Length: 193
Image (cartoon, rainbow, N blue to C red; front, side, top):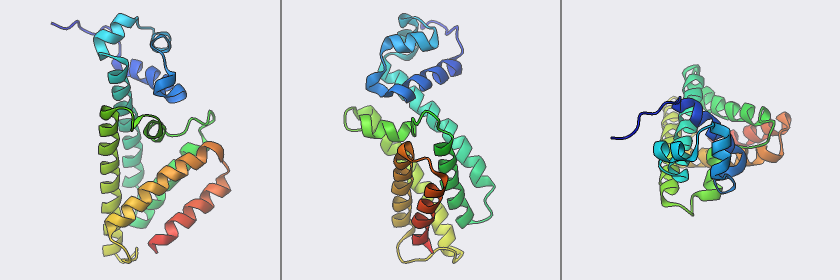
């Protein structure tokens, strides 16, 4: 029978997220995780299994936190156009407030690990599929409301928007100039109208 955890799992995931986000998967040692979480190695291994499974838990935790922010922002949107704008604005504000220039953990992980580890690749593919499906739904509604053009399918625009968000996040690691980011977003979104 597995031992009962005597620590706050969410607090540990938050601390581990900070370390992985700052150093990446390959740059994070088990000692970094011990130091950050105040757990000993055996507790980490007993509770999470391995550094990799802990990292996957961290990615899921990070993504669910992000999804909560998106849901709140999308719930405030009046129409599809405002929903798409809100998504890009949320990313822009994340970039501007990222004083350590860490970037988006999921985007960073994709470039670091997606081609190295099948379980991470699977996580990234599922995450991408969910994000594109959400964007496709918004674009489709915008096309039905005659807000967005129908030159391409909602799915094609969704993939374009998903790729654009990732590009924006990568650009934002080096360029946090709000005016530049606003102009970039404006250029990206012109395609829809």
